Length: 334
Image 1: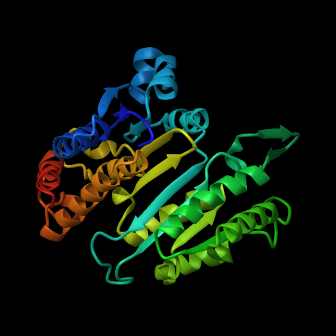
Image 2: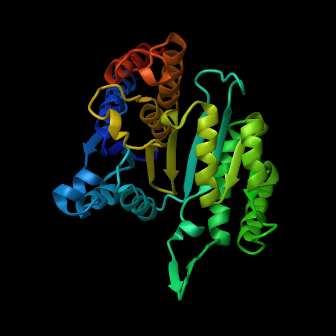
């Protein structure tokens, strides 16, 4: 176990509070079954925090994330999302973004999709250095040996628990220094771990994700490429509304659904809690509670098999009704 089970819950905006309540219902079921000693504290961040406290990420929330929590579980945030998640990733040292794309129901086009995208999370053009000279704007792309090596280790570990293959995605034929360094250093690390790997240019990878996603097991790539490819992979697997993600470092981690605040359905009780609940499963596994995390993931899959879903995926249940069904299956061991 990585810590004492202390979870900082940031409900967020829009449908965030609703899917967060759904996640809490499932966490209660996990605690009841496994007695893990989990402790949850809530904290406000996002648009509502900006209105109430003058900052989307108040200092006391940063302090809890850094010094109290073992893991942060965050719902979707509205217009201030970039002012919340990017600083949290940086302060927690969460250098690897892990985005599984796994079908909960078979696709007519691709069957079952099952892959993971591991993206470097703190460098690349998202490092945030931009400037203007005259009539020209510049954005600095940052690529370090250390950054490539540490995220490659994460990809290698995921591959070792899956089908054992990593595809390094880059554009080193054009960006010979920045992407070339990432490609080279990542390859060294994977070879040293004994992990099978190949390479693909990012444009070809996008094409292959749309054509034949089963071609991939673990995709390792840079920040901007991964941001784009992971949304594509999520849509191929069934939709971005079902996709969880993890932002992990050496000591702290942040877990969240990929989808946004969905203001159009906020407060209606119909938001799909799948992504948030699967983020809970990822969080439990990262905290060292692999059995509990696997139980949550199986319960979600079984809910889809039985049709216990919200209207967006063809069901008729509300958010909490679906969460209660999943929680019940967790309590019974599915």
